[in-house]
Image 1 (cartoon, helix red, strand yellow):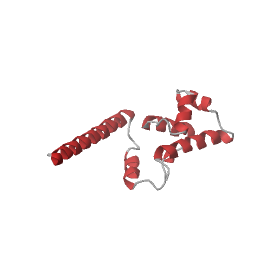
Image 2 (cartoon, helix red, strand yellow):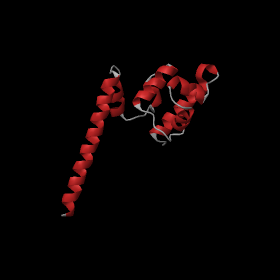
Image 3 (tube, one colour):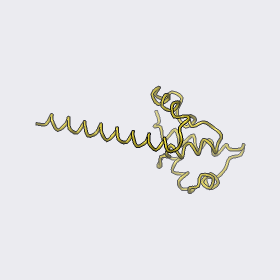
Image 4 (cartoon, helix red, strand yellow):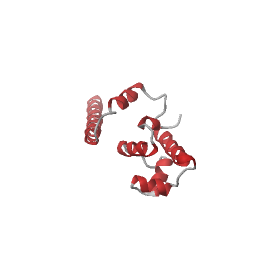
Length: 120
């Protein structure tokens, strides 16, 4: 199974090349997204990972929901999270991201402490 960012990249490419029936160039999409064509290329090849804010902007540009960028058979927890965040403002997303980063760092710290205790 391809990874999530590979799926997202293919979806961006598909939407871009079919936009308006004839497609648009990476340069045209980059201008609309206020970024570079190089960034669009790297999103499409999964070298770069678009942020939630960038995915939201892409969804608005293409007239699709943000869920378009995620596989249908995705984890039910991720689906619930996506549904729960539908009405959030940009600042709320920043807080959610910070909280997720905090939880990840906390888990790694707890795992490191547990690993250190086992060595003794």
